[in-house]
Length: 416
Image (tube, rainbow, N blue to C red; front, side, top):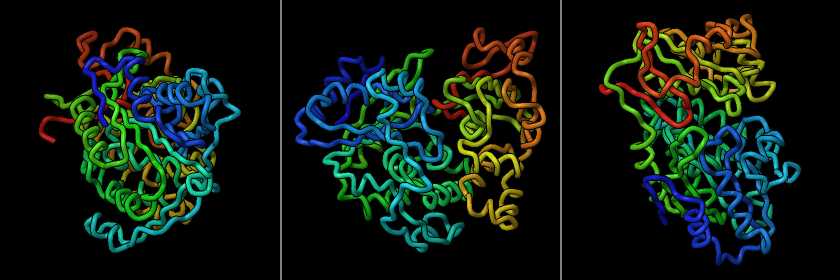
């Protein structure tokens, strides 16, 4: 079932849609799988709150954010994201290294076929054990469809296989996407990684009682506009959401960016693991020799967990070809391919410069991972986020492009 509004679905409309989908459920135990606070503009926190309002008095409802490799949500993030309906102590934390069970394997022959021979190894399909043995009558996966660097378009079964997945699927899928190439994937549906997820969905979780609630959104300041809610298990709902997101979130520009300034909201972006959306969501629009300035007041680390952070500091954002060499040379990186993929995603491959402007990470640390550095206060005085508008700006005779939220878009040149 599809619910749409050009202006954005009102809270009453969302509540009515959720009542139509879930109001007659006979489920006694429900697991909701929303994204975490790093997807604060997905609308998923609000939807989760409304489901609890609708069913909380007659069902046992658990909430387990699809963290993937992200850090667990803080109490403040929990309160803000779920409108106070979910207590922080009641959140189930998905531990991607420890909490998973293996359901099966995507054969090497299939992986080789969809990757055009670039990857020739099987991929283990692992999910949080609670999906299998938690005794849930209904699993509601909530999330936003938007361009994505690994899978092409985020969400649908990605919420299960990566958000609630284990190290094998997370590492393998990220590296499969990196091998295949960012420009060939971002903003498209049938990428090699998506086809791996489709295989896993069909062969290993078809019997799980999953309902997908997918959103397409834009934002106006802090307000999230939910233009579409796509409810159901069938892939056609995801495909309709992809089409809608491609129209709303994929921005084609007439001329390449010589300079682009991207702001990272400190509530959402606390690591370069997340903040590098500024890099890969704009890279297809940046001219060779161009400049990317990342205003990152909230960034205080590189990785979302200590081991990933250590590896990023050790190897740095050194470009695709060098990362592939490092994977062959170093066992610790070979055993953490999602980090290797991230290092590829976060590099410009020498095409344009990347300057991180930080308060909480030092010049030595930023330059140590192969970015340029500038004090945030200095950069923000020149490029004040409060005064800039999304799109082209001009100041002191300099013309540059400004992006206030890289999480909701993909920018590309017309000829791409």
